[in-house]
Image 1: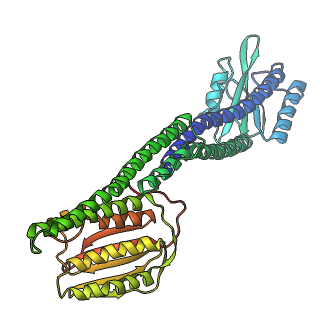
Image 2: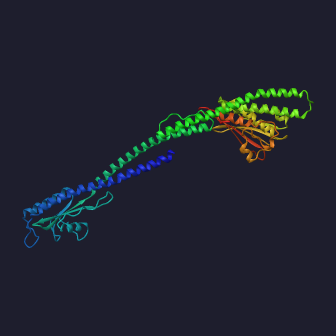
Image 3: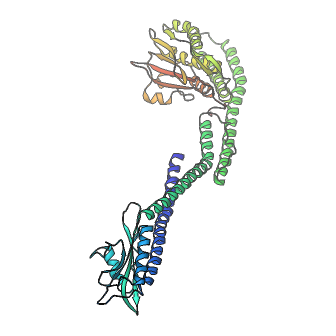
Length: 475
């Protein structure tokens, strides 16, 4: 969720910074240019004041070489051009020069210079020149009229290079860019803290939900920061988990108590059946059937009690040699397999894992028992131990009739037995007990088809210890 939320916040922050930075950059450029334009306006006003009282020579705009005001104007223009490198001149209405610097600079017939000159002839200062950008090379033209007795007699024009203006604009933009980058970094840091603060309770809640889903019912959401709504959700989740655990504990207690309490009446009933059997013929079929059903009921009660204890107890994990344990179980079941004409083999190299040895032994007993029980005479049951980076596995395969896809989806359910195997001895709880024992230790049991025929059962236990244990699933 954080990888989806964080880019969204960053994009929004970047959009806000751009929305603020672009107008600011344009404003900086306009301010730098306006500063130069104002200076040029002041300069043209000063030159216009000097040119206002320059006397025209006889016969038109011809100046006498000894005109003191003209000499002052010409000297000022040349000094201005020499110091600042800005071309400046005073031109009569017909475009001829009253005084200019450099001397070969004249009014062109077209272009921006001519437009500013013509505008000044209308007795108003030329408009502000077009905005100069750092990537453009251009010049700033400013023209002001020289007015005498209410008439425009000449025009003062300055033609400024823009190199320094563009440099100042670029420096201002670099400063703005550095500020934007710094603000973006601060915003990203704040977004990281904000998303972490908001999502931390969600991550804790997700981890706790996973723990409960995998059997650790005592897991709870620890008190953490975050928005008030998520803190309230965490408290509600803990209350729900407490109620669910209480209900499951009541179910387990009921099953355990019922199984325990029924054993005594059942034992008394079986004893009375035996007493009645003494008065009947030894080959009486009905009494034999009653004995069988009584023993089966006793086995079911024992298995129910074992299941309740398995789902209630916490695993006692220790570093276990799975290969040695599997080899021991193979040796223990070999006589039973030989008695049924089934070949039981084991490939059990040494490999360690974190497991409850008693629980793992019980699970392997149930799996091997089923494999031997349902494999016909002459068949084979193989037990193979292997390990990868995170888990150790014990795979038990047989050459029995196997299960259909529908049966595979139900195998391991409580009291479930295939319709083809109803007459085989058992309560239908052995694999359920195995699954509960393995789940308490962080393991699992899976079922699949074995080619060309038979069933493949895979028992998996973790090679690394886990933190915390809890009760696995419910009855």
